[in-house]
Length: 383
Image 1 (cartoon, helix red, strand yellow):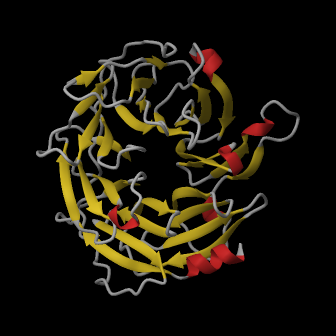
Image 2 (cartoon, rainbow, N blue to C red):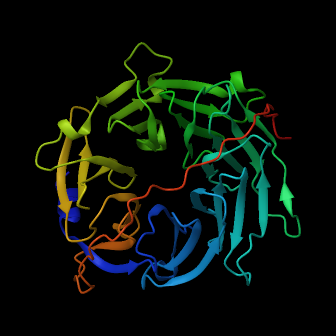
């Protein structure tokens, strides 16, 4: 822990980029994974103005913008094998693929869902072969919809392979594939459940390998532990839960840590909400990020008995931080929020960028999603 604390202590703002519209929220962040040169990494951000924007990580300059109006976007993910390909899910019932090498701002491929689908979460398997998106609940149904994720040029759209519809009974807020096993996917819902599926099985009942109950509404789900045999979740009530899946079929307790409200259980800092979590494989440590209403970011180390405050990053954001991405390759951190700011934090960086600007956001919420009618289907095993 001493090495981790020392490394984090030297984090400073290296670069700052500001949205053209001061009322734009940065809602989600991903970073390209397949490039060998660190300087060529690309940042993709999801914005509240329904646009996906790409940035050069080192210069923090905007490279490209894709606009999906009028539908609301709900996530952005890079392809694991091609840094030029970016996926985004949308409330109009489609996942779209964007190619930075293609001129124009149109999607090169669409993965369309069923007529009822309003996607609010999604992810792509580590080998890019499967896309999975989670829907809002419509009537009595909440779906996990699956597609063959491979890019096939000159194909206008792809139909689903099928769906799961029995394992969650409310909005599916999170879909998170296993970092190394493309058949495993964890999902979270406002029904309080975190489910883990092996999608190589023939039907939904067999695919559901474990269910963990957060007893709250699930906000974020992630994988942790050596060989990623643990899952954790952050709840909408600012709780933190951490489970060991290896104990599912044993008599040992599955829960490693449970904190119902992080705002009341960490000393040394002031936390108003939880931003995200990151498992650092190199150090075998789970790091949480908590935020304040004024934009400060607290870095927290998770232990089996307690969560410890390591450092608070100040002088960056002036409003709520909505999203973050930890780059383990160079121990840098990328953050974005409601102040229309995108920040790159690096160890021992010399803070030469302009100081944080005051928030000028309008007192309005992100646009509401539109609910439509429902239909059922079931996932069949891919041949």
